[in-house]
Image (cartoon, rainbow, N blue to C red):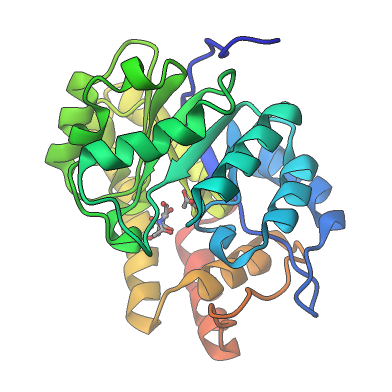
Length: 300
Ligand SMILES: CC(=O)N[C@H](C=O)[C@@H](O)[C@H](O)[C@H](O)CO
Ligand SMILES: CC(=O)C(=O)O
């Protein structure tokens, strides 16, 4: 059996949308072209599948397995569910199909009352797939589990030897900084609020996982290169353009349906509608945001 891969995860990771047919069924035939698009056009290093952007909580466990198998070339599979049993089933499955790693979000219907309880939940998932590099997925605004991520990390490798990092989708940069300063050399601290990733790079992020890397990955790679070369003026320019696009979209109303539609408009991929309770994007809003995108981000 393979051991936990020691290849450290860095750079841009696109959190993928889930292609659906117009009737709302998963559409596997679009996954091959989607992977080609991300590698060839956006230069993303890896993908994070069945996450928030992929509407994981609206998919059945069976659908999540079928999608994971199809995506499984170079991926982290998000396996978090409300039920520990479902998470364990998906973690075993990810290991069997040869994923590169798994991530787990905090359950949010019944919420863990303390960092210790959350660690115990994560441990129960990790132990059924001990060869999978394991990432804790912190996204407090969505889960309502708002405790500090740094507290979750305390002595975590004693419970989860396969622990390899955090996907940190919170805006509390002090907590993120404390995670970085506590992190071990083989961990990856991946930032997930795309509109302020430069701040996270300054604090030592090793990479970033996000939805917008689906359609501005090639620009954000330039931001990272500029940062690595010490050219903060250029890095800020790109970050400010991302902020301009997102603040425009947020004023009109930005949600996953709108985000998915923007990806469809930019890439030409046939990703279909979101699934209820996420609503499809109204046509006029989609047009306005796509136009804004084109005015801010010329082809890379
Ligand atoms: C709440 C949410 O979906 N967060 C994503 C990652 O975790 C981000 O990639 C955002 O979609 C992005 O930063 C735009 O706000
Ligand atoms: C955005 C992100 O990382 C997710 O879809 O889970």
